[in-house]
Length: 136
Image (cartoon, rainbow, N blue to C red):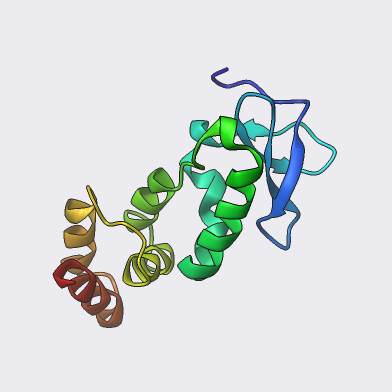
């Protein structure tokens, strides 16, 4: 399914004001605009970036509700998005760090968190947040 659009999918959770939806097909989690072909979430970590603009506690609740309705698809793969956000500009890194501070599992993200902590171009507040997350 790599690089292919998914035509038959159901939008389930609005991700952004721009009309980006998380949905499900019969075989995968999908992101796209309503009434247009979507793309599998697992093909592009950027696809779930708008979720980071919500607190982890809210996003977790919304994701769990969707996952329960489509158990056969397994968990929605958010970890690649969090990992990617930690390597992006400070705005996205801070949102990912806020998720981690709010209880998102940080297993396997130690190197990325340390990189944010030591990134000289990032605001001090973001670097300090990375330090707090690393130490927690």
